[in-house]
Image 1 (cartoon, rainbow, N blue to C red):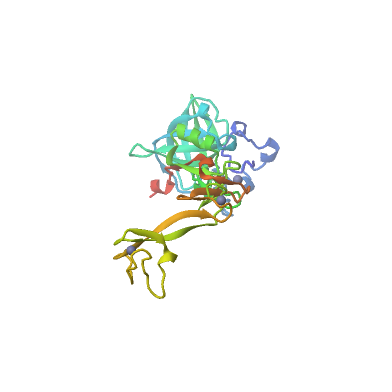
Image 2: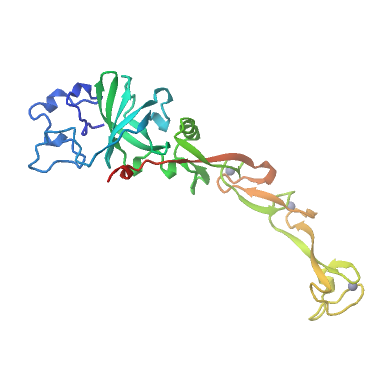
Length: 314
Ligand SMILES: [Zn+2]
Ligand SMILES: [Zn+2]
Ligand SMILES: [Zn+2]
């Protein structure tokens, strides 16, 4: 972690302070310029490291800060609340009560909107300035790809290689963020997966005895007038249909007769009955299984109200 944006005048307060030897001479050498645009123009003095070059707007909305721990879990023991001080396109300044240091530099920052809703954004703490019984903190919004609550992290995505639905964050982490009031459940579904490896199987209607899909059903014809039901092959004559029972000729479908499905027959094992069964086949582990053996799993997806700093800027 480089400390390129630490804004401390007193570097000893910085959680990742630069060794003193590195800051002697020019106190804010240009290479450590605090400008969020990267560096000042050549004739700038760089004398005000605490001033972002981005336009800042003063706000005083209530806010909450949730430190982010390993594997994207919220540090629920150390959630802080306070008030925002100012906001720019790239970052936010806020003040929290107490002197309990934020344990990690990556946080989820929540800002209460005027309609009382909280909106959230991932940010990285760049400086902490201790006040009497409070701390002033500056945090920089993380770029989109580093945001914790990207769609890929909070919504199930189908992994074409593993044939499974996955969320970038673990389901336990997602639930923990939901418990904090940051994420909101948006999808709660159950799907049937392979009982052996939990991949998404393919499905077909097949033989309940052996699982084969090579089955056929004989087509039957029901002659309304005489109520005869027989194999379609028994009705066929050259060019027209003739009832084998009452010998009526030129039967018209829908008027004189209807087609019916006969019993299903399995070409593999010879089974025959009226109904086929759902048969699963897993392309991942190769298991072929009866539908009732499939494993039912829950898939969850979440939404988050994202903080858009531009809303606060003129
Ligand atoms: Zn069979
Ligand atoms: Zn007939
Ligand atoms: Zn499988």
